[in-house]
Image 1 (cartoon, helix red, strand yellow):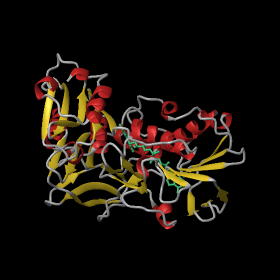
Image 2 (cartoon, protein in one colour):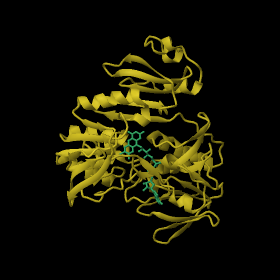
Image 3 (tube, helix red, strand yellow):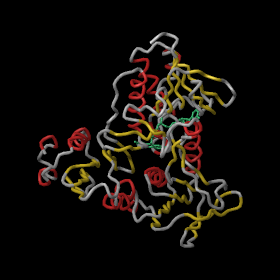
Length: 407
Ligand SMILES: Cc1cc2nc3c(=O)[nH]c(=O)nc-3n(C[C@H](O)[C@H](O)[C@H](O)COP(=O)(O)OP(=O)(O)OC[C@H]3O[C@@H](n4cnc5c(N)ncnc54)[C@H](O)[C@@H]3O)c2cc1C
């Protein structure tokens, strides 16, 4: 590549920062411009619902790179610089303050934003969302005040906030239309385990109900559910999923549908533009379909994969989707996508009562997903089983004395 080549990355978070790092690590010596809407340099979001939320982790621990890294690596990081428009024909992006930045190749890592509840009272003080450091610091202050926390949604964010709120001494009610926690992410079997875990820690659930109204004068004080129940609340956290930030891509005429549509090389419908992380709906060679994965590991690995692709390397991004969570004293990692309908059997290895086990989701005798709960150093082996796609012997799979590599 000639030295004056410019690669622009829009979205200065994990995927974008890791892409910039990879460009330099691979020897790219052109210009790298990293444009981010947020005022903070790139940071990781998992601590925002765990250690940083609870005040256990220092703020310095959340950042992807040390402050000086961007200058040292000649990455032109521009914060608080949202990009307003993308012109694929002219190969340029325009920032909100009107500056034009031309590119030879462009990477979109614009991520996702919390899905908003559009119901009466949604603008009351104390109705909070959790995506950014600012959100986290606001929620952290609210939890420190104690009182009654109502959480809309029993997904990962809702449950991690529930655990943090209980740890902070708040009373917690979770309202969820599905019949169990994490129902859509893990299916009913493992969803039930998370429901029980939280109930043991004093969380109250209202399943089969949704939130229909927030009441209060200025500050939220009550939540009304679809059954007409009224739940008192000092703080509400809405955790009902995220929507991909596709506006720029869609306005520019790129293929968009549940995210920015990309191929296995993370290339969009414009051959100079790539997308990675939460915003990308990527063709997954192993799964044989497109998937949009809103997980940390997908940003961590997808950003670098896109960077290599931008450099002309032969990339086929086929990582097994991977996720981790910590709630109370339960730590887990999950590999694969065990959504309801994607499996016909769940098998276990280990001690479920003690919550030290591995769950396997199978379809037609082959492992399609696995989750290790308080059992460590097995995720690579689980991912290898998923990747193999072969039928396994159920007795050996569930026997803790048989190494996973020999199932
Ligand atoms: C509270 C929380 C906890 C989480 N915990 C876990 C966990 O335990 N395990 C796990 O696997 N995953 C977890 N995740 C998910 C994980 O953090 C995301 O998958 C990851 O952040 C995605 O990174 P990304 O870089 O693709 O996008 P994002 O992190 O969403 O970053 C996108 C960036 O692009 C910026 N941007 C958007 N539009 C523009 C524009 N037009 N111009 C300039 N900039 C723009 C945004 O402001 C943002 O900074 C968690 C997420 C949250 C919110």
